[in-house]
Length: 448
Ligand code: ADP
Ligand code: MG
Image 1: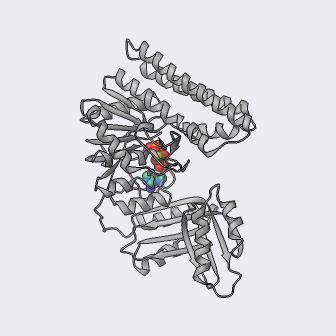
Image 2 (image 1 turned 90 degrees about the vertical axis):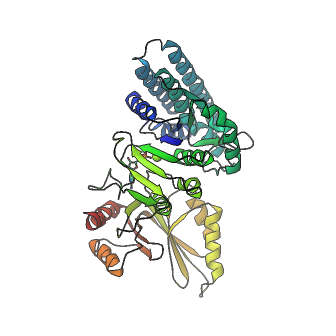
Image 3 (image 1 turned 180 degrees about the vertical axis):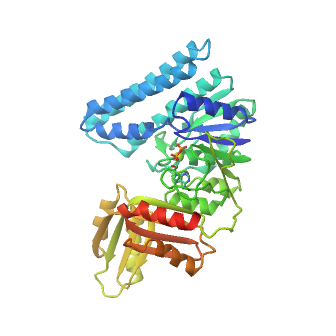
């Protein structure tokens, strides 16, 4: 059996829902994981933040979310006779969840605080809506879809906003669900959210539905996990912004993980973890072009290309800490990285000198707090608006290639650079404004 995951763009409107249903029909007993409808999670999080000082705007957002979902199910169900009961069930589901949302928004306003725990409850409403509504619509369209509540399956720790799954629990749970799954039903589960041992809703991090699908695929020992999206696989660069980006037919798990970690939005960075452990291939496919081969991510690595792909993140920060001691000891470095660990700040690029260390990281809520703590270990300076460009899969690269790449952007000031031949990775940090132009030049040089 295969696990099929459909992202926000696939869940965008009634037309894409129909496309998705046609795709599901071509599979024998798949397990389906869906994201929230396009832009809903962002809207929910925005409403939660706005609720503190602008309850009216927060309420308007809740109203928009309700209207959008009502419209999707109405549009979807018009072509099916006898769908009035299904429509009523959908309206009622939307109503319950929008009421719940509005209650949370009132709580936030009254308490003048948005906790990480409540943010997760609110963020999960997108998938709680889409998964149930899609199940109802799928059933009306002739599929034996059956809704599975992710809170009953995806057990996590209590690290709200970026929870880690309890893999043993999930594997056991799936075993008990096998019967329900194998009787010809098509289970549909919302991705991205789960529940901790204290019955609090948690989320697996932004774009976490990919991760949910991979966890389910591993628990079911699936033949493959298919990530269906709006582009034909993982490309040599973001196809939305870089002309001539090409789909990559084959990637190793490690290359795909690096690509995702360094900014290729098409996959959540943890997606490959559960799948690679059991050698389950991940296919990335396009709902608008289902026949296109897409990308196969597996244990195999093909080494026929100098560089596999270029990714970038546009809004990072370089933090430099200069030790007040004249000789930099290992303790200084350990102290600096301890602060980053404490704030769960993943490092993208590092360079060191005798008495200082520079670190490029993605922007996040924790940076200011980390900087305050780093000041205990030396003089801290920051350089905001940094673009982190990564070339992944340069195992076969020679010095000439790196020279060629740097020559392409010799008119652009480089703020940091790191290269490891053994890791096959080159990272370059430039100002945000120079990022996309640099990426385009390098991509043209390497892939045209
Ligand atoms: P979904 O809603 O299906 O999860 P996402 O928006 O999360 O879709 O991911 C798909 C998008 O990722 C594409 O539309 C594309 O613009 C972007 N993207 C960024 N980098 C890459 C890449 N290297 N290859 C493919 N897509 C990429
Ligand atoms: Mg995605």
